[in-house]
Image 1 (cartoon, rainbow, N blue to C red):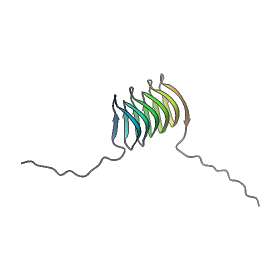
Image 2: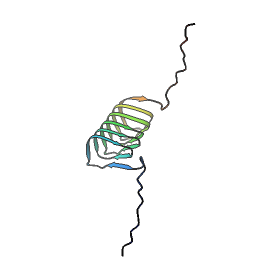
Image 3: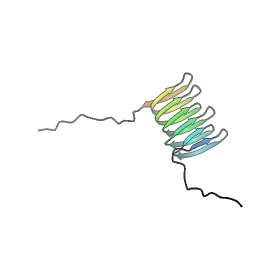
Length: 133
C-alpha cells in the first residue's frame, strides 16, 4: 500500500526564485521577472527584474537591463539602469549608458559608458516664490 501525503498549495514568494540562462543559450526578446538572474549565456533584448542580476564571465547582454542590483563579470552593451549597487568585476566590459545609485569598479574592468549617479531620494525644493502684495 502506498502512503501519499497531501501537499499544501504553497508558492515561492516573488523575488525569492533564481533564474538561470546557461552557457550556450541565447534569448532574443524581452524578459520580465520578479526573480533574480544568473546569466552565463546571451540575451539580446530587454531584461527587467526587481531583483539582482549577475552576468557571469561568459555572459553577454545586448540591449537594456533594469534591475535592483547587478554584479557584472561578462559583457554588457546598451542601456543599464540599476536601482541600487552596480558592481563591475575585473573581467567586466561595459559600453553604453549607465544609471545607478552606487558604483563599485574593480581594477581591470572596461567601462566605456556615460554614467549618471542618482540617489534614491528625490530632491526637495524649499524655495518659494514670493507673491505680490
